[in-house]
Image 1 (cartoon, rainbow, N blue to C red):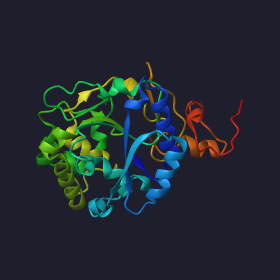
Image 2: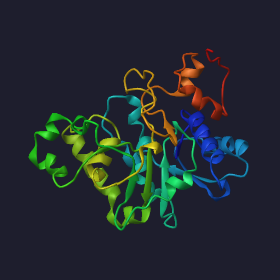
Image 3: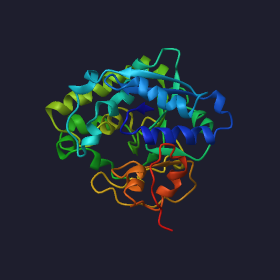
Amino acid sequence: MTLDTAYLRGSMAAIFSVLQHSSCPQNIAFHFVSSQSADASFLRATISSSFPYLNFRVYSFDDSTVAGLISASIRSALDCPLNYARSYLADILPPCVSRIVYLDSDLVLVDDIARLARTDLGDRAVVAAPEYCSANFTAYFTPSFWSNPSLSLTFADRRACYFNTGVMVIDLGRWREGGYTRKIEEWMELQKRVRIYELGSLPPFLLVFAGEIVPVNHRWNQHGLGGDNFRGLCRDLHPGPVSLLHWSGKGKPWVRLDANRPCPLDALWAPYDLLQTPFALDS
């Protein structure tokens, strides 16, 4: 997970939920990535005070690594350099770490993360995540992208579907061998010259991996609970079982709870809120 003061409350809830629903919490190691400019001592102390026996390490991410590659997106929060750290995990984490579960900070698990971590990646896949093939995939790229044959043919031999990068199982060994960080950067460099997408760090992942990932059951990312990227309106759960609740989108449960304007599903996040401020849920 990434770690910063703005989302620390969400991160703490996510950690708590992972531990609470794990059959063997002592087997879980957390790798946190924070900005080089962040107060790492404060972040470590906050985690240690709530989870004194947690096996964790905080890694520093140099914002300048990616700052020159970021193009303005539809929501300023998506332009934070730390939001792009997921593309550099193979470089940030030590070589002995060969497989991880990447999680965003605005989610909680209600199932054992070991079940997700055991996802079979087969002989060649680098990433596993829930796929959403009913989503309008073309909407994630601009008309300039689709009207240019040399670009749109990127997906010609792939059954490309949208997937959310907030929950991924990643084989870091294969990532390193395939040089996937550089492949993502090449698309970001092109974006600086020709605007081919609008939505932050997600589209480069789609360009590199869509149609090539191992699909995971949708129960592992009930995403979109934060609404869209503009208004953050309340949303319902997707049909089916739930193992992970994800408040992707503009609306974050801790912000809505503090404002005393929670959405109904925010009540499912509240029990994991270790850094809570006083609020009242309407009965």
